[in-house]
Length: 102
Image 1: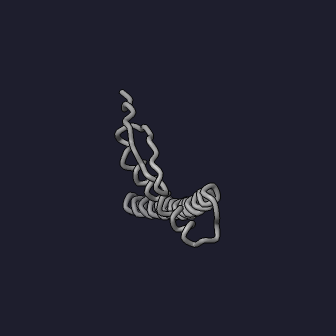
Image 2: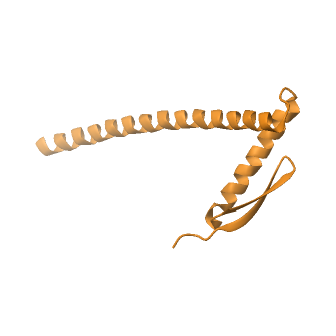
Image 3: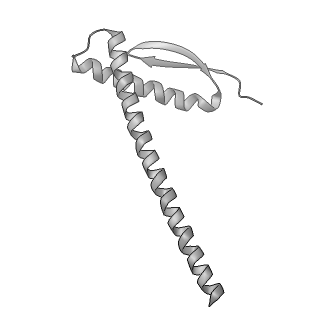
């Protein structure tokens, strides 16, 4: 059965937003809202961007940039892991074939 939606209240730049999500996603949603709030405050404190819309856009771009970098790093690690696993499989096959023929 699907989780029922539960009300969640988050604050971003001092403004309260009431949302609904499955109970299992509540901690992640709260953490995401807190992350967005921190990023927006950082952008606003730098003073180079004026207006909530632009602060939000810059914060979203910063967070998305971090996400893209993490995805690229994850993909590189995954490829490295797969390559190493192939090497280990080859080594195991080699050892087993030696024992079978020896």
